[in-house]
Image 1 (spheres, helix red, strand yellow):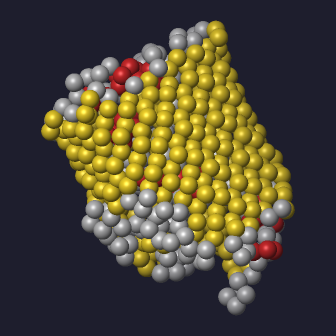
Image 2 (cartoon, rainbow, N blue to C red):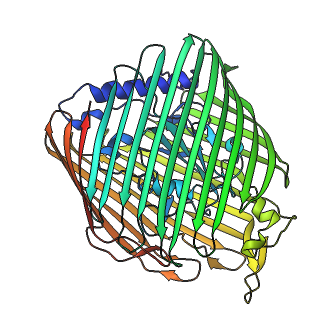
Image 3 (tube, rainbow, N blue to C red):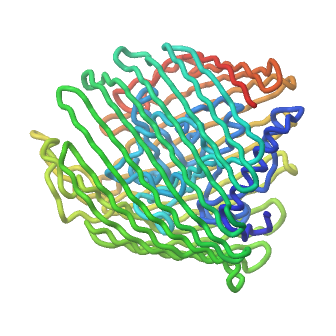
Length: 607
């Protein structure tokens, strides 16, 4: 199923690899590290089709879900923070808004693509979703860095977070787990997946509660997901997904307030393939978001996004792979009862060529047409080369844009925000170049990438200092550059380590100031060991230094997390972890204190 360049219909390849992972996990190896099997690495997000990672020209990482489970990383935000070039910023504690900053881009310039559907825009933010998202029901997460609007459209200026729900196949497998600990934290989750040769299914359900440290700062959430996928004929794949989240939190920073934030995304899709040469896939999806803020100044925001995407892939057309497609999107945004609706359409074309057995070249172009502000052209190109076994050189360049929201253009008088119908889209142009090197056989992997991105027509709120009444304007330019470094080690069968370090220089070139929430130095490291077949121990380290917030500099911080688990009987694990073991006092966002030292325990049963 997996040949040199993965020229195979995409859904079949992805489902096949999921089956291999499930089979390896359920086989009951002597060591739980054996569940982290060495399958051929592949990525989907870089070209919209599965490709062998060693031939990918873009900077992309796949989150190792099984290793994250061993390290007791339970939230999507924490998992994303392990990737070089990615900075995750929380507003204090679980349940608060969480933002992603990739390579100096702002928090609105990263696109989440969930089960093939873009989830967010400047109007419909992802921040509350990420603030409470766990990893249950997720089969795959890819982090694609750099401008990516050519394949994914608006908001993909800094990068794309690609999330795929679990595909099920084979004998039923699953897990049931509980969590308890500091600040009256209680959680429980259950997941199951399985299937036959022609039908696969998966489902997950989670419940979480915590009081957090501060008074009036509690958080309650439900999360759930499901996927059903079948092949009624050998050439036809059909399926549906649903992912939902309901969160209720309390906020204390600007006076006591209650927040209810719900996110629901559903898709249906069908793919027809002809042998291994051609596949056409039609995906229809809907994202619904509701944000309610209850205080002395209440507010309610609702968003609904209806998306249809049609993708056609020729896997071996004159020695090239060609991806061509079109998408239609209708966005409905309602702010405090005032609603607007806008239609957007796009067409995209991308091709990948392998001039030799060791080289890859790709290029693409896209046209987007927005009913509100106009149109945008974007492009992308890249190349990779394997000069020798274990060495990969890669480079890419491209452009991105982010369309202004309805609130940006039409204003919101209740917030003191005036309209500006002349707004243009934000734009970015960036490039990167790097090397991936295997060291000492398969013991170590080293990756070093240099990147540079320029941003223009950045949207900034310009107001009267006395009244705060103002409007959004395209007034600034920015530039970011830096180096991403990643090292992974497998010293022995039971001892593993990883390190990700990013140096970032991100500046507002119009005002000649540092960009807020963009640390110059970010390091995330982890080491784990298995001193006994049933016992796992490990520690993680995170250092963030040289950063500013919107109005003030922020202190550096260092956090340590400790984790251990013991398999008391086959597939029954006891877990303990300590977060912020040094009891560091710090703020990721000015005004919001991060949580101090906290301890959690848990029980997990896998079947």
